[in-house]
Image (cartoon, rainbow, N blue to C red):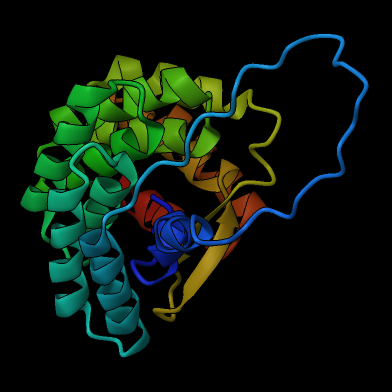
Length: 252
């Protein structure tokens, strides 16, 4: 999951902070045009009203972010939600806050509220999936990743699905997902992070762990020769890929 910083999401609410002030600006007078219009335009919709409380809580939120006080920022965010209960962006920001602080039960509940409003909310689907994964509720995580993939066709989401399917021992589904991934045009350019033999985090082409996964599936099926072939193939692409080295050692 690509985490978004709670602090960075303050930009989500710039419209809230500026909308009220915009209402006080005077529009310059236009020169009179005596030529009748060819078609009548519908009157412009009035600007939405932003309450004084909303502007106050938004200012509180931005100052708390500026001073790195996320507890106060969360409090202000709740105040904003109470004042603007239909604003999905505010609720999404709260879900991100809980996720980034590893309060996965809360982030699941908040994300589910958004999905109850709009089951195709992609950000809420991703948060819900990642939060269920954090809780170890893998079947629910997979359901959300599947819905997200159907909506986005995103390679990284399919990658998450493959490894959760393996953890759930849904090996046939996992193999089908791995094959779809290997056929993806962007599989070579997609990067994933793993820890190497020196305990350093390193990026590898997504193709490497997927080929390693194919070897793990062959090993589960009892085909050691086929498994070895996949592990060797992964190591040809990335000689320092520790997971493939470990799997190859287990075959001996």
